[in-house]
Amino acid sequence: MSTGPDDLVLYAPEEMAAADRLAATLMPSFTLMRNAGRAVARAALQLGPQRTLVLCGPGGNGGDGYVAATLLAQQGWPVEVAALAEPRPGSDAAQARAGWHGPIRGFDPERAAAADLVIDAVYGAGLSRPVEGLVAETLSRARRVLAVDVPSGIDGATGAVRGMAPVAELTVTFFRAKPGHWLLPGREHLGRLVVADIGMPEQVLRDVAPRCWENRPGLWHLRVLTVHDHKYSRGVVSICGGGNMTGAARLAAGGARGAGAGLVRLAAEHGADLYRTGAPGLIVDEAPLEELLADERRKVWVCGPGLAGDEVEASLPALLRGGRQVIADAGALTGSAGDPGRLRGAAVLTPHAGEFARLFGGPGDDRLGAARCAAAEVGAVVLLKGSDSIIAAPDGRAAINANAPPWLGTAGAGDVLSGVIAALLAGGMAPFEATCAGVWLHGEAANIAGEGLLAEDLLRCLPLAARRARGSALASAGAVS
Ligand SMILES: NC(=O)C1=CN([C@@H]2O[C@H](COP(=O)(O)OP(=O)(O)OC[C@H]3O[C@@H](n4cnc5c(N)ncnc54)[C@H](OP(=O)(O)O)[C@@H]3O)[C@@H](O)[C@H]2O)[C@H](O)CC1
Ligand SMILES: [K+]
Image (tube, rainbow, N blue to C red; front, side, top):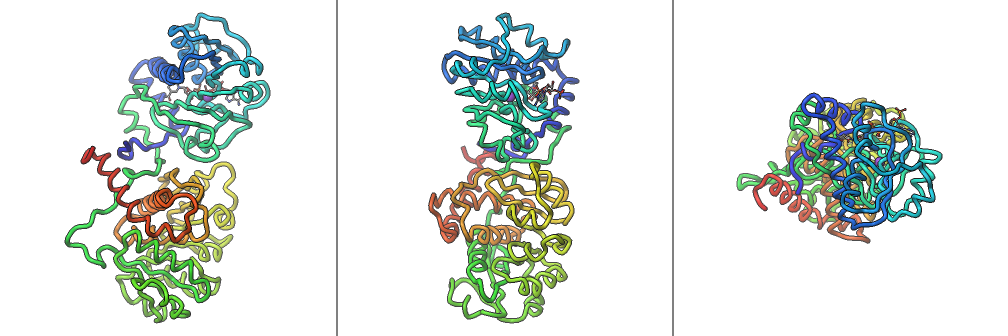
């Protein structure tokens, strides 16, 4: 069951270290390590008894490993421990090491290959350089891995693989998940993720408050309609329609209608007849843009899907000058390549990786950091689309989305998404929340449609996705069980 933003918050390694430091002023820090090791042992016990090798690094991650090994041995498990180096004297890890009374071996790839289960307690939040040499060789020979906190080599802040990282069957992390658990490629190395409560004091959530969340219902709430609603209160969405590539704007319009906009209008000064053959509930306007902008009710616009360069030039600056809430996608992004300042004033930018690189330069390994910088630079919400879409706000908030199935990568799906976000914005959500909710609904609609979906299939699945979002938000508020 998902709950509120506090439950969805993601702690980057340096924030986790700050949390640990604060916790240490409120309680004995070894208690956290003992609870962490206990959670690892509990998870291993659920896998059933087997010959287990615990690989311990020199820091806190290794400390968790010693605790887990000690508890498993007490349960009669055949457990061996291999260590890289002695923990720093006086550290919690040294105290955990002192609790282990069996032999301690060196790292040995053959021993790892012979074990039925390897508990990877080599590096966690303190990963400071690539995993190489004997550690990499040993981890790569393991057949079945239970990772402590993160698989060693996964950067908890970015999800990048530094050197190498094993692919675990199960990962046990503590207190809250980390951005690297949800960002790719890290997410692919976790197996099943267990987030264990290790007794971190509540005050930590208040005083060390990261501004990054997993994107799920509960982080945002969809509006619930009342008898007083009508089409204008539900939201008016306008879409710029190109004269040639008409499919993209129609898909965006369909996305807006499927996501609950009360009225969707397509502005097509050229080619209006082509659009009129489409969905009967879509209103097509042939008047020049200046005339349409005189209607103050038309606050939210999608600009870009299916637009050629000259069509973007003829619409985007006027929309921004007119103070409209603009979702800039596709052609509007391409038209500003290398000059993202042209998009200043837009509410939301929706680049995929290629468009992002052309606008802001390649993001490198830290896509979360790059999206946050881009959002601050342009003063707009930036949605960096992918299998792990990142939503970043100019004020530093960010969310990572993980519900998109691989079959969502199909032509036209991005156009639908722009329309969905526009509908939520027009319905009164703020840009960051509207984008987060739109991305989640889009992924959920794709899961409902199933493998082999066409972009058009998303449209009919959006209402059910919205019902599910409302259902889980209600459940998390305790309104239904
Ligand atoms: N609240 C919690 O979440 C708790 C987490 N715990 C566990 O503690 C670790 C973090 O412990 P920390 O000591 O900060 O870090 P690590 O154990 O990950 O490793 C640090 C040491 O490893 C060396 N290191 C790092 N990367 C490499 C590498 N690629 N090659 C060689 N050596 C490496 C590092 O060396 P430096 O030169 O950088 O100093 C350190 O010696 C967390 O992940 C949890 O598992 C606690 O149980 C408390 C509660
Ligand atoms: K680890």
